[in-house]
Length: 223
Image (cartoon, rainbow, N blue to C red; front, side, top):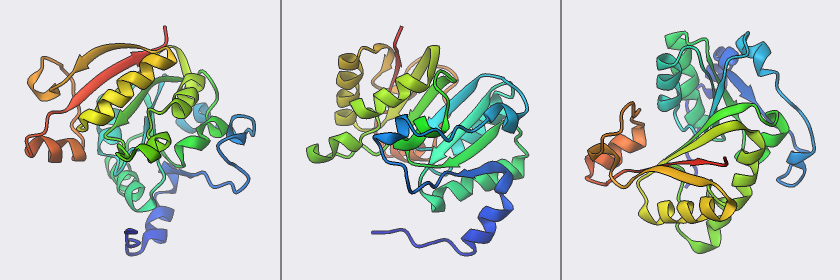
């Protein structure tokens, strides 16, 4: 069921223009996104060349905004394709006057066209849609076709951090990362009952945790 467009959405988006980049290019598709360059100058946007972290599928932006606030010397790119969700994050960033975050309305498949290779120091995949049907596996954000994108964007030593409430998706992700050549570490099968420090709880995470669901987490690196 399609989400109803939020009231005054266009005006709200316009009022948050300094926090939003709308990446809409009808010529792009998954295949040519690797070759068709529309690179964004993030150093110019952030007015510095500090390390950049990327959250793919940021939803309403609670994690991204909290991370930006808690890590003022790191720049944050928060990517989301659903306008109804991304507006909440933009408005939150504006209300907090966060100088180190920008939201991109963009499909993950098109990121290679907008973000230069080797420029991302950390990638967050927080509660991505698990697409439980086997026929939809290629849409999972830890599928090989997305790992190819992350590999291109990642700087040397960069890490991917994934959290999910879905054990089947977590198993799929471990297999997918491993087969691609990523080294997996810091695996938790019950994050909230572990000794992990510095966890930022997302809106989905709180919901699932309150329901008694364990939270799964891992880190993946290529070197």
